[in-house]
Amino acid sequence: MPKDPIRVPNALDLFGKKIRLMREERALSQEKLAELCGVHRNYIGRVERAETNMKFERVIRLSVGLKVRPELLFRLIPKHTLADAIELEKAVKKLNRRKE
Image 1: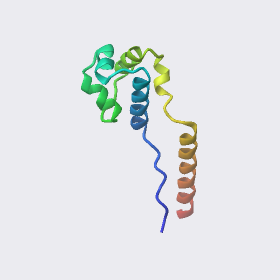
Image 2: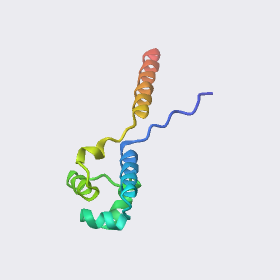
Image 3: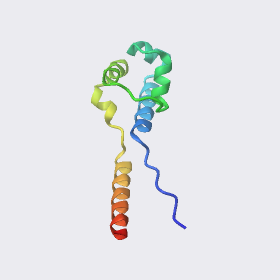
Image 4: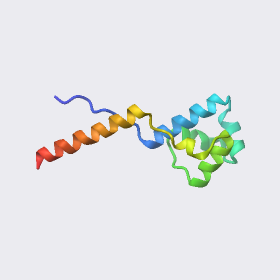
């Protein structure tokens, strides 16, 4: 019986967790961050729960609200997770070659 597959978080999950962590580090409520960004307070919650995709314009607004450079928001994937994902991809390709 095969082992459980390694779960690699998707980009939206990682992005939402990063936003929440940055918001909490700054002691901001979702409501206050939404006010600083010019969005509805429910929107911040949906982003943090990975329930919505953000438009680029809102990423910029979010970076302004968090007082960070926009590119910092895209540093999402911890190195070990990226390495795991790459190894998993290699293993899948290897298995696919064996089937051929």
